[in-house]
Length: 345
Ligand code: KG4
View 1 (tube, rainbow, N blue to C red):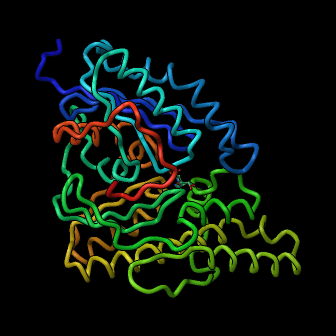
View 2 (view 1 turned 90 degrees about the vertical axis):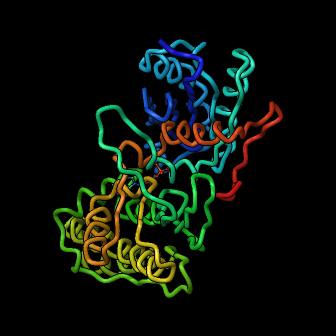
View 3 (view 1 turned 135 degrees about the horizontal axis):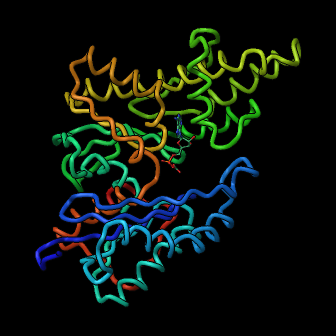
């Protein structure tokens, strides 16, 4: 039984290649449905036009399932929160248009969500019968995904500042592009993670960038990996097959070292020891272990999200919507999505 005081947020996420919808009631997650798009596998990466078409097919069934699983009626929903950006414009348009239609039909407010803020606030999703130990402000968040590698200083729920970011490729792109060179299917990150478990992380050494401040760079690593393979394949055409696990373990270790070096520097220089990680790459088991080790050594309070909340999902959009709702931050029907968006927007 829903009461008038309940705040029930329907979240919509469609920024890249996952169509997702979630329901959050008074901060507690009731449902989180995600439809992945397998259509991109054949192309070795996300094809924007195919992504938006798949969102168009998936969005209604996904929302319907989220509402049913939450065991609520569409009339119980207080507000609809949708990802406005950053992301693929054609994909974002599907979620934005759906949100407008739903908001108009039900006469409820609409809340725009910055996808990156959503990743950070995934740490505040509460679930019934699950422990809840959210980070305390201020904290640092290492946001690592297919499109971003950032260190974010989080002062409050909606007060965030990017203090470091990649100047070229994202960490996820480094995983995916290097995986492609080895002939692994897209997305390569999870596959490298799996193969790395059987390999020697010290087998090969790859170039690490020298970038000032808290910024990252991954394009040099990708090139160094490519040239290394090209040279080795000249000597032995079966090199990749024979050393795949060692290659994955060494590459993964290099990416983790690069990520951790800057995070450690940021923690030292800001004096903040409450540390979180977010985004698709935070599903990486090697990164998780390295963060836990670093936390032990440096007396950090480390917060690692559940796997389900690391990759793109609408639960993180709905929880961000919940906080914005309480601040009365709504948006009108003239809202348009943005492919690029700063974390503070
Ligand atoms: O946050 P996310 O779901 O979405 C986008 O940024 O679009 O992140 C996707 C990225 C991909 O690059 C994928 O390869 C990477 O996260 N990823 C992983 C793992 N799981 C997903 N990278 C390394 N290890 C993993 N286990």
